[in-house]
Length: 185
Image (cartoon, rainbow, N blue to C red; front, side, top):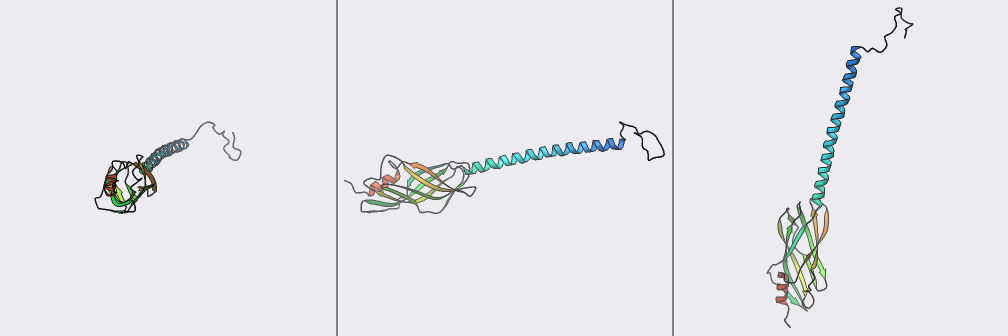
């Protein structure tokens, strides 16, 4: 190529680059590679954090409880074929995160169970007792099928969940206490 505007009419050299241009290209390539590597590292870290956060949320949402009727030995009353007495329910948090038990209730013909105590925080693997009010109709209360307790619990993510747990009344402290107050015959 010939430049017609210049007085020095030497042909331009094709295919050659100046050392400055070569250095600039190398720097640009190095910057692009560095930006790519940093992006990959940050992206991988972000995905890892997101996965860990999701796993933690899933773990915190798991509710696994064991419930066992216990006697409170606090007396009770008998009226018109029904026994009303206080009791306790032992709860074991078998889940991986702390939970707060907000309420316990159950109802079927002849049986009513309602919690009367305060909220109960249970750490993972921890146990605690909830005070309950029990009402049994002496003639029909103690059937062989388990009583389905409904528990309202708040998980570590501040969400309230309803869970059920079957409790056998036959042979329990609650049955023993109630039958001791029901008339014989």
